Length: 198
Image (cartoon, rainbow, N blue to C red):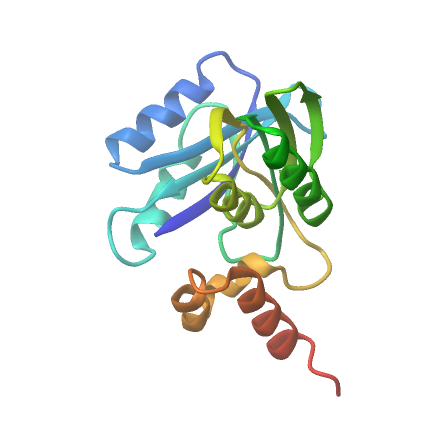
């Protein structure tokens, strides 16, 4: 299953290499890694999204313990089921005709993405959203001719307020119904289970 791990490290040229080496030795499939400056000087925050090849949470728990032992690692947390704010940026270059171009411009209102470059035959769109919304948009755009696509990888911070939609992955119904209707399913589970009026 997919796990999201947040790591705080001291700035070090070899720090990321050591983490990647550990992940590959433990046979975790890396979906994305982002690394950048954070709120503390001389430190960096790494957000890792991996796929756990084994069943259960024990392997992921062992992984966080192993990362903690690495040089320059200050803190490690498996944040998979915590309330999160998750974001990812994707740039997509599309080859389009006049009709397709108008369709995508209308889609921009629904998905709230930016059109950063436009010519008679191409568009470059920029989307910043949670990973689920990006996947949904990619599925919609599959019918068009995608020339290039680049995703930054996921970043995440834990919420101090209330439950986030990512936490709904704990519900069996969520996983079963996601392919059928992602957004309707999220809305039903989120509002019906989490915000029932008293």
